[in-house]
Image (cartoon, rainbow, N blue to C red):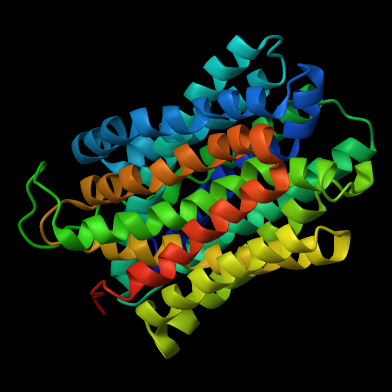
Length: 381
């Protein structure tokens, strides 16, 4: 097929499918963390230390991914990552020691963020075709995939499927999707202004990175600890351990599909300020009222809170006039992933010392930082 004859809508669906691959791959891992914790007989601090490996791999990946996207193009890097990322998922289930699991999670994080940078760079190029904000809808697909992945995880648990069988099914399916949708990848990355490969980031990019940091600390906590929170603090039945995670992913998906319209109506700054408030409020509800109903409600609010933050930040970073989209996204992600890097392990260490319930309060304060930082940041139309 001649790529010049492909409509913007087809490009949008193609890149959206890669967001789906990334979302369901990560959610499948997150949905089975409690099982793997039991399998390896880990306490909260040990799990926190092992989970440290995943964002560590993501951090190492950032300069590598930015460089590869700038040199090879995001379409090539995205396809490579989309095939390898689900494949590595299946290996996580056979880890029989904390060291092996941590090693595999390091490379899982590395490939995951290589996918993240490349697919978002492709999304910026598609957004240029539409000449309007559509980034949130891409992230909505990622979240919808995460919600679907959590639901599939719950189904697999109820059917008695062990993580290995579960992960192999997901890996094969996602690799097939990535292969068959490669025909409509964007041929070139967006170019705005005269952008050198490497340049010192300006204050706007730094602020965007800090906003991402606050949000991703909460997001990482939800991914890695929501199941454990419902298991230990809420004391949910085994069949409902993933309810909080599913609630979070569901409202995050819904918020992202609504996000582009909300941004057009209320503005980027206002949406980000409201997002920080919802993150903090949702986490504090779960802390002070750790029952099945109220904790689920709190996680629903957190999902709405984080839904629009990363799409807005990434869209703004991709429009930088001083850096190429891939490098600008990697720069902002580098700061943002520090939150992802620090949040989940911090939860583990604080939980071991003071209790898991109160460690979530620290993340609530970080989430509210999104509101404060958005108030002092300038945004492009």
